[in-house]
Image 1 (cartoon, rainbow, N blue to C red):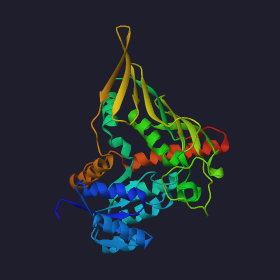
Image 2 (image 1 turned 60 degrees about the vertical axis):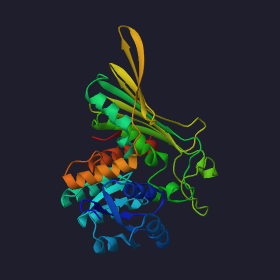
Image 3 (image 1 turned 60 degrees about the horizontal axis):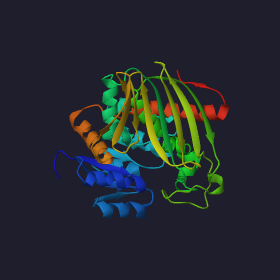
Image 4 (image 1 turned 135 degrees about the horizontal axis):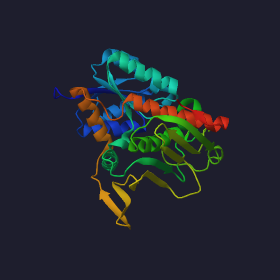
Length: 350
Protein backbone atom coordinates (compact mmCIF):
# COMPACT_ATOMS: atom_id res chain seq x y z
CA UNK A 1 0.00 0.00 0.00
CA UNK A 2 1.36 3.41 -0.97
CA UNK A 3 2.55 5.45 1.98
CA UNK A 4 0.51 8.47 0.94
CA UNK A 5 -2.81 6.60 1.05
CA UNK A 6 -5.03 7.68 3.94
CA UNK A 7 -6.05 4.65 6.00
CA UNK A 8 -9.80 4.72 6.57
CA UNK A 9 -12.32 2.84 8.69
CA UNK A 10 -15.89 2.70 7.37
CA UNK A 11 -18.52 2.78 10.10
CA UNK A 12 -21.81 1.51 8.72
CA UNK A 13 -22.17 -1.11 5.98
CA UNK A 14 -25.59 -0.12 4.70
CA UNK A 15 -26.59 1.33 1.34
CA UNK A 16 -24.59 4.59 1.52
CA UNK A 17 -21.38 2.74 2.36
CA UNK A 18 -21.27 1.35 -1.16
CA UNK A 19 -20.77 4.84 -2.61
CA UNK A 20 -17.93 5.64 -0.21
CA UNK A 21 -16.22 2.27 -0.62
CA UNK A 22 -16.46 2.40 -4.40
CA UNK A 23 -14.88 5.87 -4.34
CA UNK A 24 -11.92 4.53 -2.35
CA UNK A 25 -11.57 1.47 -4.61
CA UNK A 26 -11.59 3.61 -7.75
CA UNK A 27 -8.76 5.83 -6.60
CA UNK A 28 -9.31 8.76 -4.25
CA UNK A 29 -6.14 8.72 -2.19
CA UNK A 30 -7.56 6.34 0.38
CA UNK A 31 -7.37 2.72 1.47
CA UNK A 32 -10.25 1.31 3.50
CA UNK A 33 -8.66 -1.10 5.98
CA UNK A 34 -11.61 -1.72 8.30
CA UNK A 35 -15.39 -1.85 8.16
CA UNK A 36 -17.74 -1.81 11.13
CA UNK A 37 -21.44 -2.54 11.44
CA UNK A 38 -23.57 -3.73 14.34
CA UNK A 39 -24.83 -6.48 12.02
CA UNK A 40 -21.75 -8.65 11.51
CA UNK A 41 -23.07 -10.40 8.40
CA UNK A 42 -23.57 -7.05 6.68
CA UNK A 43 -20.05 -5.90 7.59
CA UNK A 44 -18.52 -9.16 6.32
CA UNK A 45 -20.45 -8.88 3.07
CA UNK A 46 -19.02 -5.40 2.44
CA UNK A 47 -15.55 -6.57 3.46
CA UNK A 48 -15.67 -9.39 0.92
CA UNK A 49 -17.07 -7.14 -1.79
CA UNK A 50 -14.38 -4.47 -1.38
CA UNK A 51 -11.45 -6.57 -0.12
CA UNK A 52 -11.36 -4.96 3.32
CA UNK A 53 -9.15 -6.92 5.73
CA UNK A 54 -10.65 -5.99 9.12
CA UNK A 55 -14.24 -6.43 10.30
CA UNK A 56 -15.75 -5.05 13.50
CA UNK A 57 -19.18 -4.83 15.14
CA UNK A 58 -18.17 -2.15 17.69
CA UNK A 59 -16.74 1.14 16.44
CA UNK A 60 -14.96 1.73 19.75
CA UNK A 61 -13.00 -1.48 19.32
CA UNK A 62 -12.16 -0.52 15.75
CA UNK A 63 -10.84 2.85 16.93
CA UNK A 64 -8.68 1.15 19.55
CA UNK A 65 -7.31 -1.73 17.48
CA UNK A 66 -7.12 -0.62 13.86
CA UNK A 67 -4.35 1.59 12.47
CA UNK A 68 -6.51 4.38 11.05
CA UNK A 69 -5.99 7.95 9.93
CA UNK A 70 -9.67 8.71 9.41
CA UNK A 71 -13.21 7.41 9.72
CA UNK A 72 -16.21 7.68 7.42
CA UNK A 73 -19.50 7.67 9.34
CA UNK A 74 -22.42 6.27 7.34
CA UNK A 75 -24.98 5.11 9.89
CA UNK A 76 -28.51 6.18 10.94
CA UNK A 77 -28.69 9.87 11.78
CA UNK A 78 -29.18 9.50 15.52
CA UNK A 79 -25.75 7.90 16.03
CA UNK A 80 -23.72 10.29 13.85
CA UNK A 81 -22.93 12.34 16.93
CA UNK A 82 -21.66 9.56 19.19
CA UNK A 83 -19.44 7.89 16.58
CA UNK A 84 -18.03 11.16 15.26
CA UNK A 85 -17.14 12.48 18.71
CA UNK A 86 -15.54 9.16 19.70
CA UNK A 87 -13.48 9.09 16.50
CA UNK A 88 -12.31 12.69 16.93
CA UNK A 89 -11.34 12.03 20.55
CA UNK A 90 -9.39 9.00 19.32
CA UNK A 91 -7.38 11.32 17.07
CA UNK A 92 -9.03 10.41 13.75
CA UNK A 93 -10.22 12.75 11.03
CA UNK A 94 -13.92 12.28 10.25
CA UNK A 95 -16.07 12.45 7.14
CA UNK A 96 -19.62 12.26 8.48
CA UNK A 97 -22.62 11.64 6.24
CA UNK A 98 -25.35 14.26 6.07
CA UNK A 99 -27.17 15.43 8.09
CA UNK A 100 -24.31 15.86 10.52
CA UNK A 101 -26.69 15.42 13.47
CA UNK A 102 -30.39 15.19 14.29
CA UNK A 103 -30.32 18.48 16.18
CA UNK A 104 -28.21 21.57 16.77
CA UNK A 105 -27.05 20.59 20.24
CA UNK A 106 -25.50 17.37 18.97
CA UNK A 107 -23.90 19.21 16.06
CA UNK A 108 -22.36 21.76 18.42
CA UNK A 109 -20.71 18.97 20.39
CA UNK A 110 -19.29 17.49 17.19
CA UNK A 111 -17.79 20.82 16.12
CA UNK A 112 -16.37 21.35 19.63
CA UNK A 113 -14.78 17.90 19.57
CA UNK A 114 -13.15 18.65 16.22
CA UNK A 115 -11.70 21.92 17.50
CA UNK A 116 -10.39 20.26 20.65
CA UNK A 117 -8.81 17.38 18.74
CA UNK A 118 -7.33 19.51 15.96
CA UNK A 119 -8.67 16.99 13.45
CA UNK A 120 -10.81 17.58 10.37
CA UNK A 121 -14.58 17.21 10.61
CA UNK A 122 -16.04 17.18 7.11
CA UNK A 123 -19.78 16.80 6.47
CA UNK A 124 -21.00 14.76 3.49
CA UNK A 125 -22.76 17.59 1.68
CA UNK A 126 -21.56 15.90 -1.47
CA UNK A 127 -23.50 17.90 -4.05
CA UNK A 128 -21.14 20.84 -3.53
CA UNK A 129 -18.62 18.72 -5.45
CA UNK A 130 -20.62 18.93 -8.70
CA UNK A 131 -18.86 20.87 -11.45
CA UNK A 132 -21.95 22.94 -12.24
CA UNK A 133 -22.29 23.93 -8.60
CA UNK A 134 -18.64 24.98 -8.48
CA UNK A 135 -19.09 26.94 -11.72
CA UNK A 136 -22.12 28.80 -10.42
CA UNK A 137 -20.56 29.59 -7.05
CA UNK A 138 -17.48 31.00 -8.82
CA UNK A 139 -19.72 33.25 -10.93
CA UNK A 140 -21.50 34.48 -7.81
CA UNK A 141 -18.13 35.21 -6.19
CA UNK A 142 -17.07 37.17 -9.28
CA UNK A 143 -20.30 39.22 -9.05
CA UNK A 144 -21.42 38.07 -12.51
CA UNK A 145 -24.99 37.76 -11.25
CA UNK A 146 -24.82 41.05 -9.38
CA UNK A 147 -26.05 41.25 -5.83
CA UNK A 148 -27.72 37.90 -5.09
CA UNK A 149 -30.86 38.38 -3.03
CA UNK A 150 -33.04 35.28 -3.46
CA UNK A 151 -32.80 31.55 -4.05
CA UNK A 152 -35.39 28.82 -4.42
CA UNK A 153 -34.50 25.19 -3.76
CA UNK A 154 -36.70 22.25 -4.67
CA UNK A 155 -36.19 18.49 -4.36
CA UNK A 156 -39.52 16.88 -5.14
CA UNK A 157 -40.09 13.15 -5.20
CA UNK A 158 -43.50 12.00 -6.37
CA UNK A 159 -43.15 8.47 -5.01
CA UNK A 160 -39.97 8.12 -3.02
CA UNK A 161 -40.50 7.33 0.68
CA UNK A 162 -37.41 5.29 1.67
CA UNK A 163 -37.51 2.16 3.82
CA UNK A 164 -41.03 2.47 5.24
CA UNK A 165 -41.01 1.59 8.95
CA UNK A 166 -37.20 1.57 9.16
CA UNK A 167 -35.03 4.23 10.79
CA UNK A 168 -35.72 6.50 7.82
CA UNK A 169 -39.35 7.00 8.89
CA UNK A 170 -38.93 6.97 12.67
CA UNK A 171 -38.25 10.48 13.93
CA UNK A 172 -36.34 9.35 17.01
CA UNK A 173 -33.69 7.80 14.76
CA UNK A 174 -33.82 9.98 11.65
CA UNK A 175 -34.68 13.39 13.09
CA UNK A 176 -37.44 13.83 10.49
CA UNK A 177 -38.55 13.02 6.97
CA UNK A 178 -37.58 14.52 3.61
CA UNK A 179 -36.56 17.85 5.17
CA UNK A 180 -33.60 16.35 7.03
CA UNK A 181 -33.00 13.57 4.49
CA UNK A 182 -32.90 15.30 1.08
CA UNK A 183 -33.84 18.82 2.14
CA UNK A 184 -30.42 19.07 3.76
CA UNK A 185 -28.90 18.87 0.26
CA UNK A 186 -31.33 21.36 -1.29
CA UNK A 187 -30.94 23.89 1.50
CA UNK A 188 -27.18 23.53 1.65
CA UNK A 189 -26.80 24.04 -2.11
CA UNK A 190 -28.95 27.17 -2.10
CA UNK A 191 -27.12 28.55 0.93
CA UNK A 192 -23.70 27.72 -0.54
CA UNK A 193 -24.58 29.27 -3.89
CA UNK A 194 -25.66 32.58 -2.36
CA UNK A 195 -22.39 32.82 -0.44
CA UNK A 196 -23.22 31.27 2.96
CA UNK A 197 -24.65 34.37 4.68
CA UNK A 198 -25.68 34.27 8.32
CA UNK A 199 -29.28 33.06 8.83
CA UNK A 200 -31.43 35.14 11.18
CA UNK A 201 -34.97 33.71 11.04
CA UNK A 202 -37.00 30.79 9.71
CA UNK A 203 -40.62 29.96 9.05
CA UNK A 204 -41.80 26.53 7.98
CA UNK A 205 -44.61 24.05 7.51
CA UNK A 206 -44.63 20.26 7.34
CA UNK A 207 -47.33 17.89 6.08
CA UNK A 208 -47.94 14.15 6.37
CA UNK A 209 -50.36 12.85 3.75
CA UNK A 210 -48.87 9.64 2.31
CA UNK A 211 -46.64 7.77 4.74
CA UNK A 212 -49.11 6.65 7.41
CA UNK A 213 -51.18 4.92 4.71
CA UNK A 214 -48.06 3.32 3.17
CA UNK A 215 -48.54 5.28 -0.04
CA UNK A 216 -45.78 6.96 -2.01
CA UNK A 217 -43.20 4.29 -1.26
CA UNK A 218 -39.90 4.37 -3.14
CA UNK A 219 -37.19 1.79 -3.82
CA UNK A 220 -34.48 3.16 -1.50
CA UNK A 221 -33.89 1.51 1.87
CA UNK A 222 -35.21 -1.73 3.36
CA UNK A 223 -38.81 -1.62 4.64
CA UNK A 224 -39.67 -2.80 8.13
CA UNK A 225 -43.38 -3.58 8.11
CA UNK A 226 -43.33 -4.00 11.90
CA UNK A 227 -42.11 -0.40 12.19
CA UNK A 228 -43.95 2.88 11.90
CA UNK A 229 -44.04 6.27 10.16
CA UNK A 230 -44.10 9.43 12.27
CA UNK A 231 -42.31 11.96 10.04
CA UNK A 232 -43.43 14.41 7.35
CA UNK A 233 -43.58 13.68 3.63
CA UNK A 234 -43.61 17.36 2.55
CA UNK A 235 -41.79 20.33 4.06
CA UNK A 236 -41.63 23.97 3.02
CA UNK A 237 -39.65 26.79 4.57
CA UNK A 238 -38.41 30.35 4.19
CA UNK A 239 -35.07 31.42 5.62
CA UNK A 240 -34.03 35.08 5.95
CA UNK A 241 -30.39 36.15 6.21
CA UNK A 242 -28.48 38.98 7.80
CA UNK A 243 -27.63 40.50 4.39
CA UNK A 244 -31.31 40.68 3.41
CA UNK A 245 -31.30 37.62 1.14
CA UNK A 246 -33.85 34.82 1.45
CA UNK A 247 -34.18 31.14 0.51
CA UNK A 248 -37.47 29.42 -0.27
CA UNK A 249 -37.26 25.64 0.28
CA UNK A 250 -39.64 22.89 -0.82
CA UNK A 251 -38.87 19.18 -0.43
CA UNK A 252 -40.93 16.01 -0.52
CA UNK A 253 -40.71 12.24 -0.47
CA UNK A 254 -44.22 11.89 -1.86
CA UNK A 255 -46.36 14.51 -3.58
CA UNK A 256 -48.98 14.66 -6.30
CA UNK A 257 -46.65 16.57 -8.60
CA UNK A 258 -43.95 15.58 -11.11
CA UNK A 259 -40.49 14.90 -9.66
CA UNK A 260 -38.22 17.92 -9.86
CA UNK A 261 -34.85 19.08 -8.59
CA UNK A 262 -33.83 22.69 -9.09
CA UNK A 263 -31.88 25.46 -7.45
CA UNK A 264 -32.70 28.99 -8.67
CA UNK A 265 -30.24 31.74 -7.75
CA UNK A 266 -31.46 35.28 -8.43
CA UNK A 267 -29.21 38.31 -8.69
CA UNK A 268 -29.74 41.91 -9.79
CA UNK A 269 -27.79 41.36 -13.04
CA UNK A 270 -28.77 37.76 -13.86
CA UNK A 271 -30.43 34.63 -12.60
CA UNK A 272 -29.31 31.02 -12.77
CA UNK A 273 -31.01 27.62 -12.81
CA UNK A 274 -29.11 24.56 -11.63
CA UNK A 275 -30.87 21.19 -11.96
CA UNK A 276 -27.92 18.95 -11.02
CA UNK A 277 -27.72 17.51 -14.53
CA UNK A 278 -24.26 18.90 -15.25
CA UNK A 279 -25.41 22.20 -16.77
CA UNK A 280 -26.28 25.70 -15.53
CA UNK A 281 -28.70 27.96 -17.37
CA UNK A 282 -28.38 31.74 -17.08
CA UNK A 283 -31.01 34.39 -17.67
CA UNK A 284 -29.93 37.99 -18.23
CA UNK A 285 -30.57 41.09 -20.32
CA UNK A 286 -28.11 42.66 -22.78
CA UNK A 287 -28.90 45.99 -24.47
CA UNK A 288 -32.56 45.58 -23.68
CA UNK A 289 -32.73 42.03 -25.06
CA UNK A 290 -33.45 38.97 -22.96
CA UNK A 291 -30.55 36.50 -23.19
CA UNK A 292 -30.55 32.85 -22.12
CA UNK A 293 -27.32 30.87 -22.11
CA UNK A 294 -26.17 27.45 -20.90
CA UNK A 295 -22.82 26.41 -19.50
CA UNK A 296 -22.01 22.74 -19.60
CA UNK A 297 -20.16 21.23 -16.70
CA UNK A 298 -17.88 18.22 -16.70
CA UNK A 299 -19.06 14.85 -15.47
CA UNK A 300 -17.78 14.26 -11.96
CA UNK A 301 -18.04 11.24 -9.69
CA UNK A 302 -19.12 13.27 -6.69
CA UNK A 303 -18.32 10.65 -4.03
CA UNK A 304 -14.88 10.12 -5.51
CA UNK A 305 -14.35 13.89 -5.67
CA UNK A 306 -15.50 14.20 -2.07
CA UNK A 307 -13.15 11.50 -0.81
CA UNK A 308 -10.23 12.90 -2.80
CA UNK A 309 -10.94 16.35 -1.33
CA UNK A 310 -11.01 14.84 2.18
CA UNK A 311 -7.76 12.89 1.77
CA UNK A 312 -5.97 15.85 0.18
CA UNK A 313 -7.02 18.02 3.12
CA UNK A 314 -5.64 15.44 5.57
CA UNK A 315 -2.29 15.15 3.80
CA UNK A 316 -1.84 18.84 3.02
CA UNK A 317 -3.49 20.44 6.04
CA UNK A 318 -5.98 22.34 3.88
CA UNK A 319 -9.50 23.44 4.89
CA UNK A 320 -12.39 21.43 3.49
CA UNK A 321 -15.26 22.70 1.38
CA UNK A 322 -17.90 21.31 3.77
CA UNK A 323 -16.57 21.85 7.31
CA UNK A 324 -18.43 20.94 10.46
CA UNK A 325 -19.31 24.60 11.03
CA UNK A 326 -21.23 24.66 7.73
CA UNK A 327 -23.02 21.43 8.58
CA UNK A 328 -23.95 22.96 11.93
CA UNK A 329 -25.45 26.07 10.34
CA UNK A 330 -27.52 23.93 7.97
CA UNK A 331 -28.69 21.81 10.92
CA UNK A 332 -29.66 24.98 12.80
CA UNK A 333 -31.79 26.10 9.83
CA UNK A 334 -33.45 22.67 9.57
CA UNK A 335 -34.18 22.73 13.31
CA UNK A 336 -35.76 26.15 12.86
CA UNK A 337 -38.09 24.93 10.12
CA UNK A 338 -39.24 22.01 12.26
CA UNK A 339 -39.74 24.28 15.28
CA UNK A 340 -41.69 26.82 13.23
CA UNK A 341 -43.88 24.06 11.78
CA UNK A 342 -44.63 22.77 15.29
CA UNK A 343 -45.35 26.18 16.85
CA UNK A 344 -46.82 28.07 13.91
CA UNK A 345 -44.45 30.93 14.61
CA UNK A 346 -41.34 32.46 13.08
CA UNK A 347 -38.15 31.20 14.75
CA UNK A 348 -35.23 33.56 15.34
CA UNK A 349 -31.78 32.04 14.83
CA UNK A 350 -29.58 34.94 15.94
